[in-house]
Image (cartoon, rainbow, N blue to C red):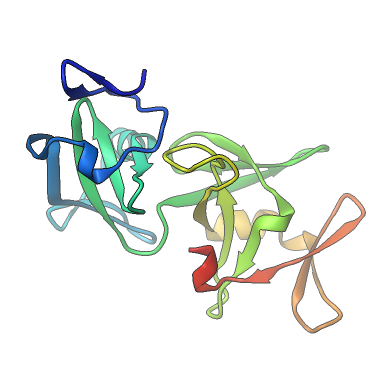
Length: 183
C-alpha cells in the first residue's frame, strides 16, 4: 500500500517518497549506518544479528532526494551509506541467467551491460531496477563480495583495449569503469 492513512506514511511505499512529504515526527537521523565491508551499525556499534541485518536491508529505500532510509512502519530512519546500499553475496551461474543473491535475501538477475569496475579493482553491478525507491529503468549500485567475484572469475577475459570483458552466452560485455555518473 502506498501513500498515507490518516496522515501517517504507510509501511510499504510502492512509489519513491520525498523527505519533505514525511512529517518530521516520523523522521529519525543519526542512528544507522551501512558500511560496505562491515554491514549495519547502530550509533557506531556493529549490529551482529543476521535477522536484524536482513530486516534493515530489506526495508532500505531511496527517497527522491537520493538519500536512503529504513522504512519501519510510519517511521523513516535515515541511513548513512559508506559506499553503496547493497551487497551481492553470491552469484549462481544458471543456464539462462546470472542470478545474484543480495544481502537483503532477495535475488536479482545480472544485466551484463550494468557491470562496473572501480579504479581500486572493486566490482559493482546495478540491482533492483525500479525497486526500493528506484524509479523504473533505474537501479541501485551494489558491490560484489569476494565470493561473488570468485564465482564468476572464469567468465572474465582481457578485452582488446586492455580492460576486461564479461564473456556470457557467446557475447562479450565490456566492463565499464565506475564513475560518479553510476553512483
